Length: 296
Ligand code: NAP
Image 1 (cartoon, protein in one colour):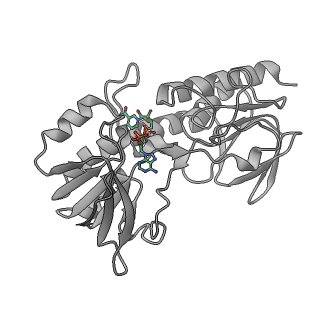
Image 2 (cartoon, protein in one colour):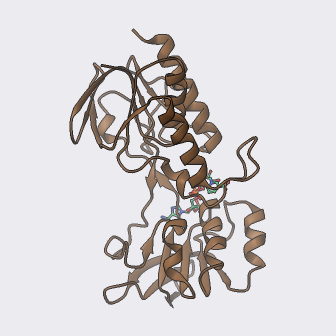
């Protein structure tokens, strides 16, 4: 029996573990992929108080090491169900805890266009830091208008010969600072009011077709497409113990509490106004603190 099982080893889950371990609780982290969550792919973090600049990889690894040194147990398993009695069922086993914190984050949103899935790993990517290096002196496109897309376009413009930045509206959601930097780069071409409607190539990606708001279509010859159109939660497996809003996020009845006793939620997976590193770690610390206080 564990005191706390934490579903997800991103910043929210790892911070929850940090607080629980420091309170001498027995903690199991269950992670489907790798530690660190989405932040591990961030090129640079510049908005975390007290740290002027750090790579996402260094931040995540420091936090992971900090938690592991305190004695956390981590299993790389996918949670398929949480029972009301706080038995957590994974693809490999069953674990019981006094409290459960769901901190499973969100996954990259797909464009849902023909061929997208077929070309993943063959030209289509969701992470410039992971795959950008394959495109040295090649032509790439980034799709999206948020900070991820802007940061990825900047990162790729140092590697690729040409970067198209394609966004569906005429203004960007991401910071002006990043946009200014992009506009100063000669090898970046910004294409607004346009959506990608198809990807094609023989065995690997060779071109994309885009359509603008006036229905004009254009084909761009590219080697790599980086899709950065936000994230979406995956919480269907927990619908027996939590309420889920119309966008798939877990409803927190009171900050990090869910409708089920002893089951809490932290980080990007919950309904909230601001999804940032700062709010993820805030949720993690709060969820662990409340879980410990309410532990039966
Ligand atoms: P985001 O802010 O949600 O932006 C997603 C972008 O994708 C939006 O521009 C959206 O267009 C577009 N989009 C969504 N669905 C689309 C579709 N089906 N087809 C075409 N475009 C689509 O996501 P994000 O950029 O991943 O950022 C997530 C959060 O992390 C944000 O709070 C962001 O500020 C933060 N972040 C911060 C940093 C940093 O500070 N260094 C770096 C990365 C991310 P519309 O604008 O038209 O809705």
